[in-house]
Image 1 (cartoon, helix red, strand yellow):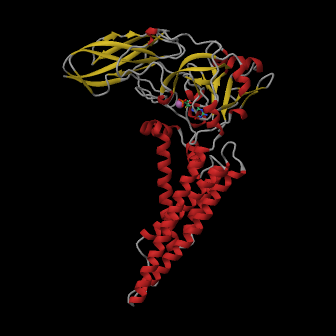
Image 2: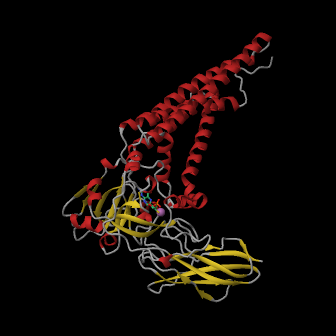
Image 3: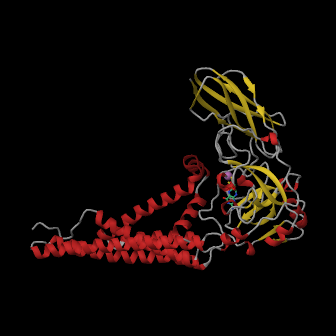
Length: 522
Ligand SMILES: Nc1nc2c(c(=O)[nH]1)N[C@H]1C(S)=C(S)[C@@H](COP(=O)(O)O)O[C@H]1N2
Ligand SMILES: [Mo]
C-alpha cells in the first residue's frame, strides 16, 4: 500500500480539535471569572486591551462603521481572531507538536498580561486566563492524540477489522470534540448568568430613590419643542441616549463603597462618599452632551435633565493652587479626561450628576456618579463612574484620548442637523416641513438658515431655548417643487459666528461642515 509514513488528513479535523479545545478552555475561564473575578473574563480583558491600544483613526473608523454597536463589533472581531488561532493551533499540533500548544500558551499569556495590567486588577484576575490556557492545551493534546490514533489506523486499514477500528476511533474523536466544545459553551453561558445576576450595583440602583432637587432646573418653556413627526425629541429618553466609552463590561460600583477624592494641586484634599453627596443641595439642569466622534449629521449627541451638585463648590472646599489649570478626572476603571479648571469653576452648570431624566444614572451612563460639563465634548469632561479629581496642569498630565491622537482640549463646535425629511425621502410637492436641531453649547444658537440646492439661505423658525447649554429645535416650511433636491442647514451662534461649510474630520477635535440631505419631490 502506498500509505505515507505520517498520514496527513485534511486540516479540517485538527482545526476542529483546536476550536473545541479553545472553546472548552475559554468557557471554563468565563465560568470561573463569573465566580471569582467578574470583569476579568479573557474576552473582556483582551477587548479592553485592544480598545486601549487603538489609535484615534481606528476608533473613528470603528465608530463610523458600527456606531454605538462598536462593542459588539469588537467582540465579534476577537471571536473571529480567536477561532482562527484555535484552528491554527489544532493544525500545528497535529503536524508539528508541540507548536499548537505554543500558540495556545502565547495567546493565553497575552490575555494574562491584559488581565493583570487593567486598572484595579487583583491577583485573582490571573486565574481565568491561566485556566483557559491550561485547559485548552490539555484538551488539545488529548484530542490530537485521539485523532492521530484514528489517522494511524486509517493509514494501515488493509483489513476490514482495521477499517472498522478506524471508523470507531474517528467517531470517538468526533464525540470527544463535540463534548469539549459543548462543555465550553455551557460553561460560558453559566459565567454570563453569574456575572449578570449577582451584582451589588444593580440591586442598589434598583432600590435607590433619587432625592428631590433642592434647586429645580429652569422650567422647560412650552415653546421649546415643535410637534413634528420624526423630529428628535427635545429631551432624549435614557434608553435612546447614545453611549460611548471604553468600558467593555459596564463598571458596577456599589454606591456604599463609592468615594470621590479631590487631590493634586490643592490646599486641602477632599473626600466625599455617596451619602454625603446626596445630602448636599442638589440642582437640576438641562445640558446637551456631545461626542467628539459625532460626524456631521450624526446622532452621538443627546440632551438630558441632570440632577447633581456643582463641581465648583467641591473644588472650592479643596482650594486649587494658583498654578493649576486642569482637572484630570479618573473613573473607577482607570479612564481619564482633562478638563480646563476654569470650565469647572466658572458660573456654568458643571456638575457631579447622580440623576438623569428623573432616574438614577443608568449603569452604562455612569452610575452612581458622573461628570457633566456644558460646552465640552464628552471625552474631555463627562467622566462616568468618576472616583477622583486630580487638580493639575496641562503641561504635567495627559488624559486617555489626548495620548491617542485627540486634542487635549475639546470645546463643542457649533453645529446643526436636519432630521425631517429623512435622507433620500420622497415627499409630495407643496409645503414640506423641514426641521432639525442646532447646538452651540454654552454659547447658544441665535439663528438657523436652510438652503435648497444652491438657492438663497432662508431663515428657519427657532423653538424657544431652554438655556445656552442645550440644543434648539428649528423648522422651516419649504415650498417644494418636483424633482431631486439637496437641503442644507447652517446655524449661527449667539456671538454671531456662522457655522463653517469647511469639512473637518472628527479627529482630532470634532467635525465641521454643513449637514445636507437629498430628497425627491413628486
Ligand atoms: N469612564 C468613562 N467615562 C467616559 C468615557 C469613557 O470611555 N469612560 N467616554 C466619554 C465620552 S468619549 C463621551 S462622548 C461621553 C458619553 O457619555 P454617554 O455614554 O453617557 O452618552 O462619556 C465620556 N465619559
Ligand atoms: Mo466621545
